[in-house]
Image 1 (spheres, rainbow, N blue to C red):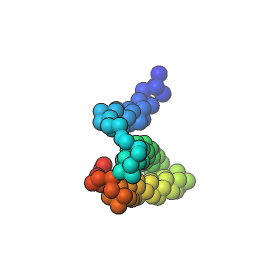
Image 2: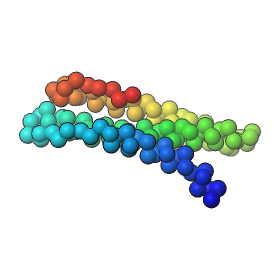
Image 3: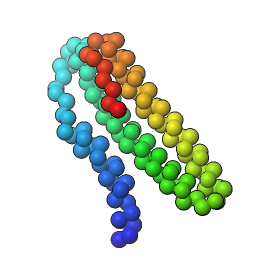
Image 4: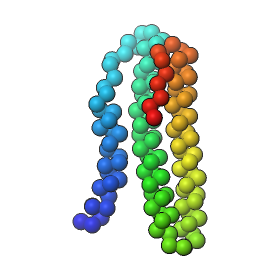
Length: 117
């Protein structure tokens, strides 16, 4: 029972983006034009980015908790520092994906680029 209670925050963090994405259902796009195809790909990338951000934030929380609970153990601290570097890389990748998607969308004529951050 204690393990079940301990995992609830992680479960909620994992579910919240899907609930948010479910509220804004994209309108069906016409795949016969370049703009329609660009919008379909942009919507798919938005879903991927939401999942990626969820994983990156969960990884950041895991890193912070493991660093705080290291209690001076050098191996745990080194492991947490490695994970912190990977977490920062994940955040940079997530931001880059949004910027690249906006650039490609505006170049191909898919409408105005939006940043979902």
